[in-house]
Length: 135
View 1 (cartoon, rainbow, N blue to C red):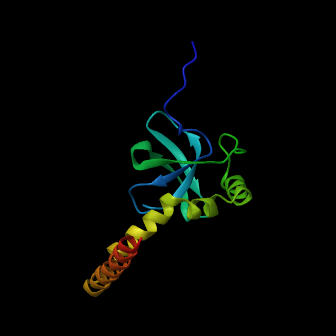
View 2: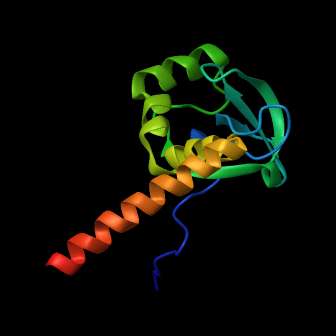
View 3: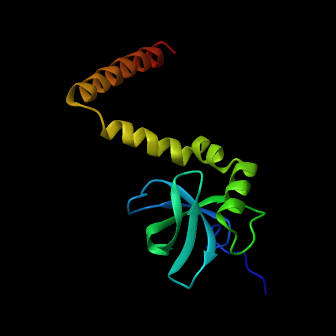
């Protein structure tokens, strides 16, 4: 009796994770080794995240995975695999990363910036309304 799992992302060696908290919050890293059911060793040599133990509750699993990473791989091997599979570029092109960038830009707006966005939305809404009325 084989049933399909609803889960698609697992804690596994080579899984790319997004750090939710701590000094490296918002950066991505790779699970290099699993310590126990609460922590893993992560490494992000190309994203500025040093090799360290990190609790799962402060990680978010992404759909990206390094396929050729062996257990307990060192930083050099992790860097080589990340560059070979262009993980950082894949992450930057993902809709998840682009939404995070857009939210950060929106949060950084000044009062005048928010006002400008409001005016632009009004203009866009007016153009759409006229096009729909014409059609």
